[in-house]
Amino acid sequence: MRIPIIAGNWKMHKTVAEAVAFVNQVKDQLPPADQLQTALAAPTLSLVPMVQAAAGSPLKVMAENCYYQDEGAYTGETSPYALYQAGIHHVILGHSERRNYFHEDDELINKKVKAALRNGLCPIVCCDDTMARRIAADDKIHWAVNRILADLKGLNEADICNVTVAYEPSWAIGSGQSADSDQAEEGCYLIRQTINDMYGEDVANNVRILYGGSVTPANARAMMAKSDIDGVLVGTDSLDPRTFLEIVNH
Image (tube, rainbow, N blue to C red; front, top):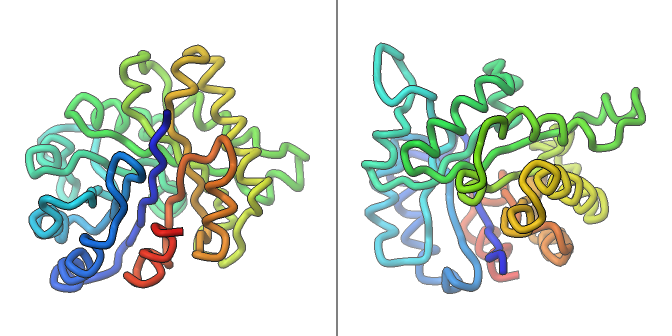
């Protein structure tokens, strides 16, 4: 059985003190990890203090990005090896904002995914579709499928078992316009079928697939009721402990 995940992505928000205060507010109000996994992805400066604050609770702390080399002359980058040694075991890779603002392509994301897995990190691999492409080409969500083929290229079955996929329509990120639950389910279903084609049914049935894109307390329940949606990746509504807990305890 796939344990659902609710993960907040803070992006470039919160000071270290604010991040630690947030953890202290929510950590004792979360469901047991064997029923629902909860996680927060935060800027690098806050990660270690958050891990320390969350110790003994169900809350997991995630990185928002990492590089594909373990060390070297890469000014400003974050080492996947250093993340793991600091107690961070999950990392978001391929978020649409990384692709759009920092021009990360599928080849780079694939390298990062392999580096994360090599260092014991579990990547949450994001793939998007754009509304413009869907309208112009009547392509539905197959763009996301192409992304998955490229981002997971060269991984074996053992690797895939440690990967979570997040379907995030780029037109819904930060826009307040979410996909409806049927659209979200369609995207997650097609991603699962793609993994089925790549690795077989048993593997596909064990990979967790999340929906991300303007998730709120009002739509989270409908999303997570769908058979192929194993959780949500929450942006804006993960910044307030009250709305985050409302989504978690839906």
